[in-house]
Length: 345
Ligand code: FES
Ligand SMILES: [Fe+2]
Image (tube, rainbow, N blue to C red; front, side, top):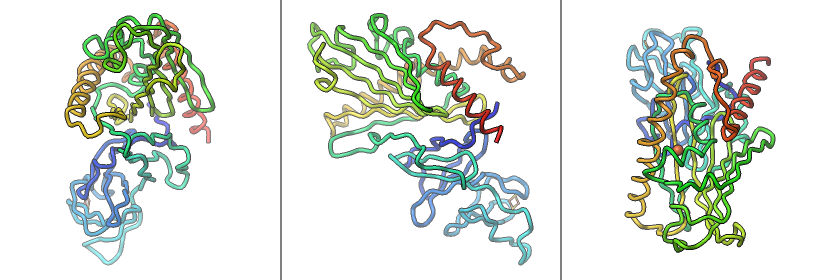
């Protein structure tokens, strides 16, 4: 599989990267992320050019990463600066360094040439960092499935009715809703609008059970697979501003063809200092994403993985279309176009 290169991949939550650094495979490349002495994050290919040791298994001397195998030293820009065996640095000893941006509590890594990285293209997740009026719980899980199969899951939330019986318990609301998919430039929106329904589980305690509400699930997608979900509920007919909205991040980063880093978050505007609320939400989302979504996505992917590994692709599997799945389908088409354009240039 070919990954989109000139795109921003979420590499980590910012607080995952401490002094010791973090080794993570991103879009097929072993990557070592670490903080320079000034606190900014750097990312190097985690592979020494000598005998290919991971630099993440080495040591640090200021901003120089020293290979733990035979001691070559590299700057945060990938330049080889030290050779313990001669005064001379051998030709071809530099390693790739990736452009990195820390924003919204997220470390973004550009998978292509650092010189071409355009930070203006990073999608907005400004709700993630804690603020005086908001609190966010966050999580991470590693999925044994290709990232586009994770995108399919998130852009088709009809699965809530079937997969999330133990958590979000859709109570059939999706079936009374309207689904729409729109593309604006390279941004895709896959939205559900469910008017005049009983309060969904997210509104428990906010509206009495006999109330009638309007409920929305607005999913925004940007390539490669960075998604923002707005879960909203308002009194029926009163307009969205009369209700509340829960913003969530659902960001998928391919590790390799068959493995995906799934970063998620959910923000609330009440009970800000409640450790119980944190624990309850972490348990709920942990169950929903780790114990409900993940096993289904992994099991579905396992059914096609052999064919894909043998050179097939999603379309050759002749996936049935139910209409509700057009968000994932269009996201695949956009990605295909972007990758083709990139390959052509
Ligand atoms: S493998 Fe890194 S110096 Fe030998
Ligand atoms: Fe789900």
